[in-house]
Amino acid sequence: MSPTVMEGIGVIALSALLVWGIRFLGLVFGEKLPRTGFFKRAMDALPGAIFAALVCPGIVEAGIPGGVASCVIFVVTRKTGNVLLSLFLGVGTVALLRGAGL
Amino acid sequence: MRGEFTRGARAAVPVSLGIVAYALVFGVLVAGKGIGVGTLAFMNLAVFSGSAQFVLVGMWQAGLPVWQMALAAAVVNVRYFLLTAAIAPMMEPYGWFGRAWRVHFVTDENWAVTMAENRRAAVGANFLLGGGVLVMAAWSLGTLAGHGLGITIRHPERFGMDFAFTAIFTALAVTMWRGRGDILPWAVSAGTALLARRMLPGAWYVLLGGLAGAMTAALMGKRDSA
Image 1 (spheres, one colour):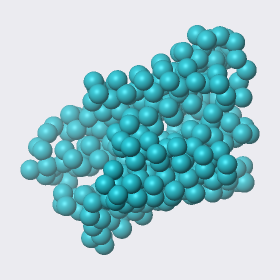
Image 2 (cartoon, rainbow over the protein chains, first blue to last red; image 1 turned 180 degrees about the vertical axis):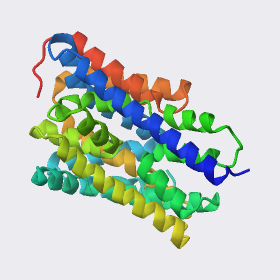
Image 3 (cartoon, chains in turn green, cyan; image 1 turned 90 degrees about the vertical axis):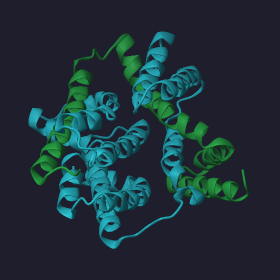
Image 4 (cartoon, helix red, strand yellow; image 1 turned 30 degrees about the horizontal axis):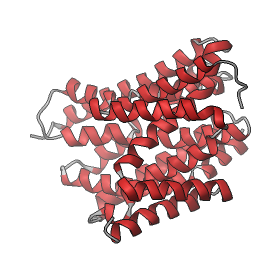
């Protein structure tokens, strides 16, 4: 049973408000934190830590092709610094290895 | 400021290419649920979160109360709390209104690009905004194309398309690497994320992994920020 037009608008508007609220509250939280000592070290390390948390499950779930592709991406990015090239080679490696039955 | 906006948009071109592919698939899904183009465009602009929109569309015909659907969409986005906490210093030059609308343009992709660039040389909120606007354009155009053109991509995993986001975030992570001091925090973050991914629904793994890694780095003690 699909929502009515008004219900559809309502659910989108409420979702938008809640998602924006999370974004905004995070910003407020970040502004309140002290910029020295423990909290500075934590905030400096946070972006890298989030990257590790974002990519690790994806690599593990992609199995051997994902592991090999991440090694390819590591080498290519370190050597060239070209993110787009790394994207294509990483995706290509996964496609190739899956095509080979891995 | 305009220069920084343009630089941010340019830097987000690679991630936007990945987004178009993802958006096409989403657009096809939306059309299949009988959701109109106008509703889709409104959702793209107002919610502007792929994961939240996937949840909403997935529940669209389930007959659930409005608040339950909205709450489910919000829960998958708890990770944004940490992403925006990390960009707080960039937003300092702006008043509350300026921060309030700019923060809407934070997505995983342009946040990642901005953080990677910020590691090389400090950038401001307009860099983030430039990337955000491009990501919104790519997402909107991709979803509308998928919806309107009836494009179907059979078995996108055969082409490795399901790995595109992991690939791009991995490449960006490599550019964020600060040295051996990152080994333990990143390992803790990755381990916590893996565990949380298995035990908890949604994207809590990003929040918990990121927090665990950052706390580890802070507890390790003195370290110069890059």
